[in-house]
Amino acid sequence: MSTPPSPETVEVDFITPRHLAGGGDPAWITVPLHRACGWSHGNDPLMPRVLLSSPDQKALLRLEPEPDGQWWTLHHAAEPDRPAWYASFGARTPVELIAAATDTLADPNPPVGAPSDPYESLHQIGWSPPTIGGDGLVSPDGTAYVERLGTAQEPGAWFVTASLGPNRRPVWQARFGAHTPARLVAAFTAALVDPKPVARIDSGRSLPTRDPNVVTRRTTDVLAVYVAGALEERVHSLAARHAAPPTSPIPSRKPPTRNGRIR
Image (cartoon, rainbow, N blue to C red):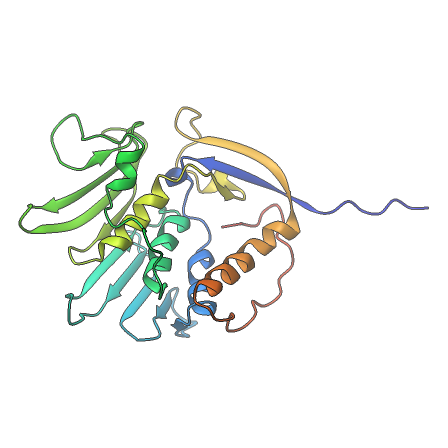
């Protein structure tokens, strides 16, 4: 009698701090916005970009490889109580952080008590002002920096920068225009300091460093069915917040191989 095959597993890296885990799979952002939140997408197979627009046509999310600029840009039209605003994110900005902002924008019923001060989450875990000049707050390990430009009378844009340490070249930068709703920036900074590791497959190609003094990787085998179902679970979770079922199923895909990507 033959022995039944063992369930297929995938080697997954769980990485902290999450802001140095690499960009991840863009589908973590785009698929739930489309399926759970009703954002529509264009179809231009000749262009290496993704365009998604909100149901009310006020917000446009663009993903476009830009070697010298931000890969993700979010533009929102002016409203009666707020001028037009934007947010943009570098290529290596983890998708989990961007998704925190886009999920907040798309959520029709923001949770009561959700943070609205982008600095609140940072203060709670001991971020402090930079030691040499500048405003804002720096992470205890010196690899992340959040600041708001402008003055108390006229506050300006928010900048979030990740690097490998003080005075090192940025790994990525996120920018939020002066009129971006504070709750979106706060959602981003809360995700930034979330201590939960993020999962990556074949992270060696996306990590900005493997220095164990900067990045911690815990590698484990995970059932491929769980890896493949992570995005589906996220879609249904976000759809539940909208009190509506997903619009259409994700096309069936084979479980990812060891060279695949989880996010």
